[in-house]
Length: 506
Image 1: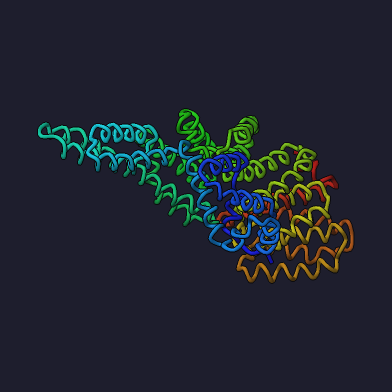
Image 2: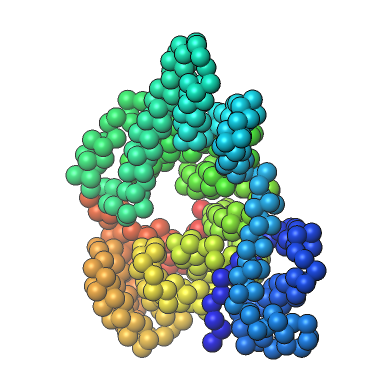
């Protein structure tokens, strides 16, 4: 069994450009006797999985590596430190946070050497940078240092500290409080969207309106900074999603993207957040079927330059999920199938980045794709990946996967297996305390289905089930469940004796 190794994980996480930079950096900063680090780096980089025994065998082939082998744990630590020194240098000019940290470090140095003019210039440079990018916590520190510097150095005109610096600090604190208020509201509403609440429950809706009342009396002009405006629109988007007003949620998703695109410097600094905003906008476009907007947003997501492997992974998981939905909902099934080999490669490449929720959602979308195409063996292959998952993510999809499994056994004429797995699905959902009206209805129906005696009885059963699902969809307080739409499409195809994909296209 291969051992886990921090250095291995670090090297594998480096982008090609970062690896090239490390080699140049190391050649300049490592001493002549440190050339063995290149060998160690290269050998680890070639590995698919970390195997220290194999690594030692490869290093042992050259006599010059004997010292390296003798002190391998310590030498790996030295290499890791060298890589991180190179990465700090490589990315130092790319992030405002790093630049600010260095400027504030320089300011302390200049003060200690009594180089007061250099201290002031450095502090004001940091202040301008922090103001431009609205780095408020750092800006607060800068203002406090500025006040201290002025008080220490001036012998008169202390009113400048009182009238300007202290005023700036008070105004900044108001902006921080404004941001914090909107962020807390946003977080509160966002948690509800992730917690699987029953948005059709009357009590929940009343509580929601009570919690959001301070938000609903605000507008974008009440947000006093860029991030405050982002939080405002994010909170409003979450609120309208919980109110099932998807067009309003779409409008606020679009406003977030527009805020980033109106400020090129901020968009570049917060490039990952911009891409997440694009992904959220894609989701809103999909739900509201704004597919002209969808195509443009998807192109932006896929073509905007990335800064790191983390961003590459974020783009992959978001673009993959929504592109599959786009293909299916616009009837481009062949394009969706052609994309699957690349999706599988990407899921391996970005396995460390993919969150479980996105992974299961991608599996689910591919399952539904093959379900719609009536390619049952492929559908079963992908639905099994969901069923085999033991995490707590996307339980709604994990639960409905059991229903899709039963549909597979019915469609492929495996009545005996269907009887066994129907009981298994019932026990699983009961144990999960998630046997809701929709699941009960589906399991009860599928339990009897293999023994239907005539085509007329089947048609009657399909029609009755479809009507019951429609009733559940429109029952106040009844929670909408994952799979309701898929089952409605399947039943429509059965009743009309049509291909599922033809019903889906409508």
